[in-house]
Image (tube, rainbow, N blue to C red; front, side):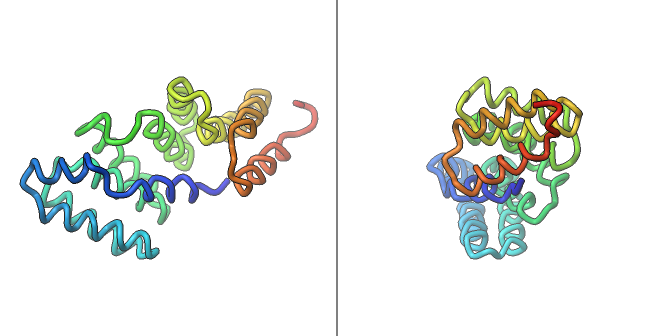
Length: 187
């Protein structure tokens, strides 16, 4: 599975009114400028430049939840999953609604899965699914973790649900590839 699609979606959320409002309320127009620079650089594939810009934004305004969140997505993009988890937890600590909760649990589940923390991934993915029963990516994350922990029947059920709700052809292929990794005995 390629987590890039999740990261691109999270980055493409863009500059939200909440982020702009948060920066303005704290008097951190400079932080907002670095935040915007981070988005611009990420959109061009300059993830190191984006990471630097988001880091400057949070150094100016340590309560800028959206900048922590977006820095987490960039860290994930470059494979720095441990620091991504730290940043997204910090963003959530500052503002529990920094992004829709189902998305937040989905991303944290992905991050934990990539770190090999499969039980925690299952927990976060299950919360995402409770909040949004059509969240195909949460089913996929939970399915991979279940597969890694040996729950092949649970993994198959999750992949089937992911296929039911996923609309992106590339992701559908990826999910079928995951399904094909499950031995016939468990089917």
